[in-house]
Amino acid sequence: MGVPGKFLFILMLLLHTSSQLEAFNDVAQLNLPKNYEIRWMKSLNDETLLSELTIPGTHDSLALHGGPAAECQAWSLKDQLKAGIRYFDLRVSALGLIIMHGPIYQHTSFPDAVDTIKTFLSEYNTETVLVRVKPVIFLFKGRVQNLIENMIENDISWILEKIPTIGQVRGKIVFVQKNAFELGISLTETDERKDYIVTDVKIKEEKIKSHLTKARDENDRADKVFLIYSSGTGWPKLHVFKTPKKLAEDINPWLYDHLNNESKNNPKVRFGVIAMDFPGLDLIRKITELNN
Image 1: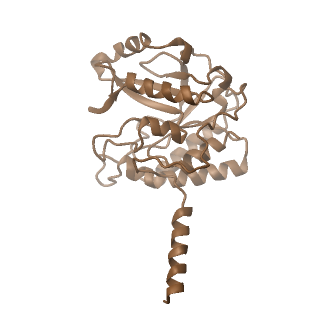
Image 2: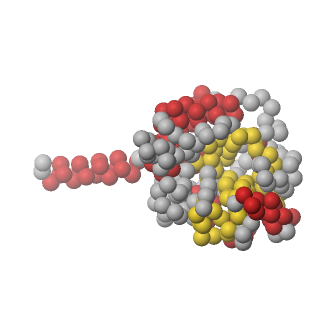
Image 3: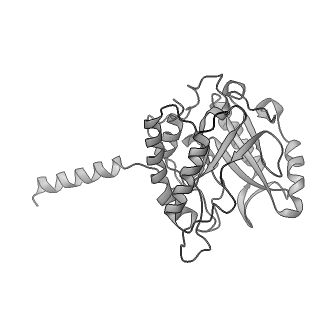
């Protein structure tokens, strides 16, 4: 191959690489394109209920430490916010309100997470952020809510069960209640028990598809915020050996294609919150575009 031919080949390779979709990301550094819209909620009608949106979220949002079996995300909380994530799943211990994933401390605390979200919302006040608190460590679960209630600032927090409009909660944290935490709006989870355990990727895809369909076809969305998980793990199923990252590497591109096809068939389709592991920018943007 001559010099011009080699140059053309390299150019085509670079163009192909740069044009690949980023549905999956495991790089810690966030690199936003120049045209990336951080304020994606800015264009939403103020009268739209949160339950009528499709919201990109992360599962075990601050699980950045502990090795392959424990890590579910690559970006920090600050970078997830800038990337467009608006739902966060925080596993909180009453012992110092530290963030955990199972038995593993995640080198941060709930107050630190709230400070990060508040700083973000002070700069991007067109946005709202949903926070689910999941109390952990059995003996002390009941103390988590009391400790958090004592630190909540009512002027920047929504703790009512009534689902608000986007106009009511711009610049605010919307707390989400489930099980042992009873502040904020309720979630309707589509996952069934142990759906997060993956023995076959294709079966997992079919489960996600059925959960999305259930949320999509709900007639009365006014009082229901659906939560769909695309996350999962094959661990400790050694014959599968899919860590959260390895599973997301398979699932996220499929999820992008599925959502893209759904939006082509129905431009007004809505799903609720989609909680992911290791999402990439293109997948996040695809989810936010469903609200246009």
